[in-house]
Image (cartoon, rainbow, N blue to C red):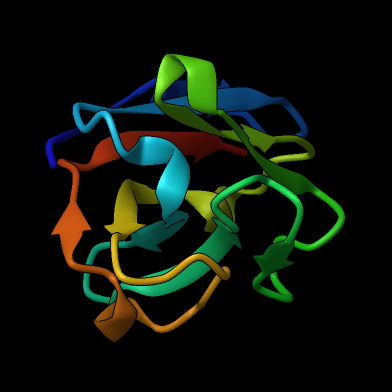
Length: 124
């Protein structure tokens, strides 16, 4: 499975950004997906995850109510809509695939494929 993330960039505080992650596998609709982020000098942290059919989602407390994860299985793509962005949201954002699971999970150890990061910088 190859994952290609895109959509990062520079945005002002309070603004919005949508990240996309396209998967190469034809079985995309059969497994859960997640987004993680890593800021300089910090460990990678969970952001959001979604079940195989989009029916279940989980979020980190830090983004709950501001970020929305969704997926379009017909396009093999998962999205992360980020609203009300804050400077502390600045990080490289990574999408990941849990090809052995269907339910969303926040544990990075459950994910077996990772995309390259896409940088999001929020200016104050």
